[in-house]
Amino acid sequence: MSSNEQGIEGIIKFIALKNAAEYNGKARVETVIAKAFAARQDLRGSVKSLLPKIKAIVHDINLLSSVEQQALLEEIAPDEEKKVEVQSHQRSTSIQKLPPLPSAVLGQVVTRFPPEPNGYPHIGHAKAAIIDEEYARMYNGKLILRFDDTNPLNEKEEYYDAILEGLEWLRVRPNIVKNTSDDILKLHELGKKLVQLDGAYVCTCSQTTIHDLRSKGLPCQCRADSNTSLELLQKMFDGSFDKNAAIIRFKGEMADQNTAMRDPTLFRIIDADHPKIGTRIRVWPTYDFASPIEDSLDGVSHAMRTKEYELRNELYFEILDRLGLQKPFMMEFSRLELDGIPVSKRKIKPLVENGMVKSWDDPRLPTLMGFKRRGFLPESIREFVLTLGLTLAETKPPFEALEALNRKRLDPQSMRLFFVKNPVELCVQNGIPKEVILKNHPNSELGIRRLRVSSSFFIPQEDAEKFSIGDEFRLIELYNLKLVEKQSKNNKLVLVATVTGDEVRQNMPKIQWVAKNDIVPYQVIIPKHLYVGEEYNTKSLEIAEGFAESFVSTLQPDTRIQFVRFGFCRIDGNHKAIFTHK
Ligand SMILES: [Zn+2]
Image 1 (cartoon, helix red, strand yellow):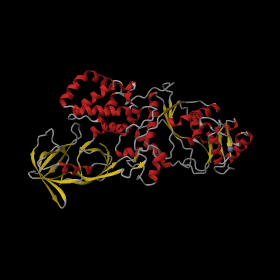
Image 2: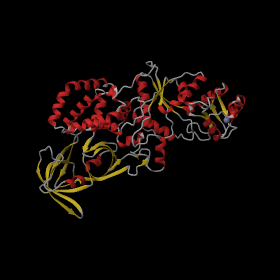
Image 3: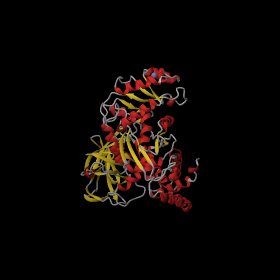
Image 4: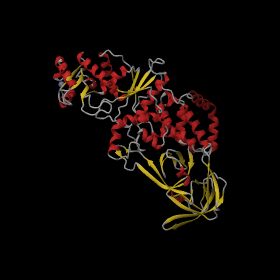
C-alpha cells in the first residue's frame, strides 16, 4: 500500500455509509469513487489500485442492515467527516491542482500544445491541452496552440478546424495560435546552418541502405565528406532532387545505444500540396527537428510531451545545443489509455475510413466530437484529466471513473423522464382517467409535466416477464398495482392489473411507464466498447427500441436527460437519443 492510500479506507467507508443512508441502504461504487476523488485530490493516479478496495468496502457495507450501517456511521463519522470536509475545502477554487512546475517564474511560464492537423482531436489530445493550459494559468503565463504541420501528405484544413472546434468545446483558450509552417523559412535557415556547422549532413542513400546501416550501427559514405554535403545541400533546396532522393540527417552516433541518436532524419523532400503553403515548399522538417526549434523560437519555458518520446529528449537538446538556442524545461506525462477504447489516431482513422464507425463523431469513438455527442460534459473531461494528473505510470484509468465524474454533474441538471424498452401492454381494470402531474426532478427546479392517463399503459418487457399473478408493483409517481392476469394477445404478452392504493411502500418494485395515449416510438443508441481485447467488437452499437412519453419528442437535440431506470442520455435527433452512461 502506498503512503497516499493510507488512511483512505476510513474515508471510503464513511463516504459509502453516507451514500447507503441516502439510497435505501445500497451504496453505489461509482458514486463512492467520485466522492472519494472529490475529497482526496492526492488519490489521482491510484484509481486502478483503489478500485478493488472501494468495490470490496461497498460490497461489505451493502450487506449490513440499515441499523448496523447507521451505527457504524455514527462510530466513524466524527473523525472522517472532518477529513473529507478539509480536503473538499482545499480544492474549492479549482477542480484539482497539478504539482508545481520546476523552475517556474510567475508571469514567465510559456507552454504549448502542438497537435498535428492529421486527424480529429481525441481524449489524448484533451489531456495534453488541458495540462498545458492549466500550467499556463497557474503561473499567469501563456499557452501557445501550435499546429505541427510539417508533413503535407497528412495535413488537411478540415483537421485544423476540428482541433480548434474541439479545444473550444473543452474551453481550452490559447493565447497564441500559430502553425509550424509559418516558420518554414526560418526552419530551412537553421537546418542549413546545422549542416554548415557539421552538425548534420545530406544523405543520398536509398531507404533500404539507411535502414540496414542504422540497424547495424554503421555510418554511410555520405557522412564523412562535409564538402560534398554542402554541394548536395544547395541542390536539395534548389529543386534538383526528386522526392526521396536526399535527406538531411543529424550527425549523431551510429553505434549509440539510444537508437534515436543514430543519425535521424531532420529534413526530407515531399511533393504535396500543403493546406497553408501550397506546393512552393518541397523540403520539410521532421518532428525531431521542428519540435525543439519551434519550442525555442516560441520562447516555451516548459515543454510537455508523452513518455514515449523520452528517448528523443537527448536529440531534442543536442539540436538546440549545436545551434546555440535557448532550451526549455522538458517534462513527460503518461499517454492516456482507456480499456476497450482505442486512444490513438493510428487506430481511430482506419475505423472511420473502413466504415466500421460512421463518422468522427460516432459516440463509440474517444474523439472529442464523439464524447460530446455521447453526452459528456467538457468539465467532466477536464476533471478526469486533472484527477489523473501528471502520473507517469502506464495505468489505464477505468472509463467508469470518467462516467462517475460526469454523472455527478448531469444528475442535478437532467430531467427524469420515462422510456419503456420493448414495451408490454398493461391494462388497469379500475384505472380511472385522470390528469397526473409528474416532477421533472425530485429535488431541483426543473419543473413539472402534466399528462392524462386512463386505463392503458406500457411497461418494459423485462419487468413484465418477471411479475407473477398476485405480485404487487408501483407505477412510479402514479399508483400501486396487483397483477391479476397475464394474457397472450396475438402472441403478445398483455398484463392485467388492479389498483391497490397509492402510498409509496418500501419493498415494492417501482417501474417506469408510459400511458398508451401519450407515446412516441423511440430509439436509444447504446455505444459499447469498440474492442474486446484486440478484436473489433461487432456488437459495439446496440439499439434499444421502445416508447417514450410524448414530451420527450419536444426536446431539442443536445438536451441531456435521464431515462428513469435506464440511464443518462443525450437527445440526438427526432425520436432518437444516445445513451451516455448509467
Ligand atoms: Zn548516405
